[in-house]
Length: 260
Image (cartoon, rainbow, N blue to C red; front, side, top):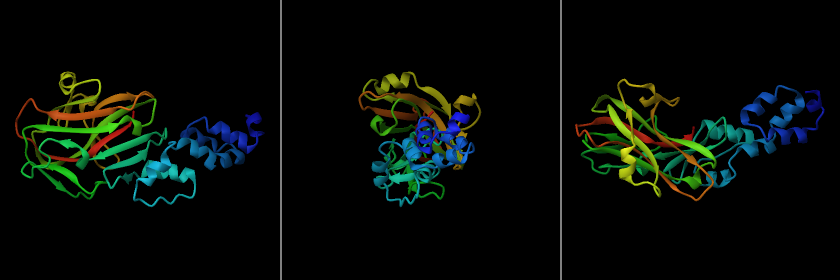
């Protein structure tokens, strides 16, 4: 440790660049030199995605961050809307890897544009201007797509449906969920291996929704590994198309893709 304390700040910064945001935060208590290095833009720039500037330019949000560290934590704690509110972008606090939520309006929702079955409303807790509210359907089928080139490479991602239930909901128990690469598996093939999840009620912990810090619920739809190969399209899907009883009371904010 004495050897590290004798190093110039520039060398310490280079060392910290090879660690993680969590490690950098811990190192700041070692000494004043470490604290100074742990605050430097050089270090925190390495934790931001290489294309973060291009991503921010797609947002109407005014990003005022005097330092790269403040920008990093701002993107971790306060997702920004991109492309006119079609999706949101944030960073995973532990790793700095990219997270995206596709707005409900950009999802493929069966009968979603039929007012008899779904309605589009504003919601005080939603980051998007509209949410999809299920009035009544027998065939529930919701899917979201994302291009892997948008995501962090060499990373395992999980897809989640982000939702709430109205006080009076009906028929929203078991459903099936699956994630596939569009270019390597058909819908029918994916349906055969879809897993069972529960939007409400009881069951194995892995199949149940979890409450998020923002007050919404999320259910895991599946996962995939984003390698460094060709750009591909991922399709995540929640469906209940086998038992055609009536269903109502589901509020969909969006579908999120974030590192495991």
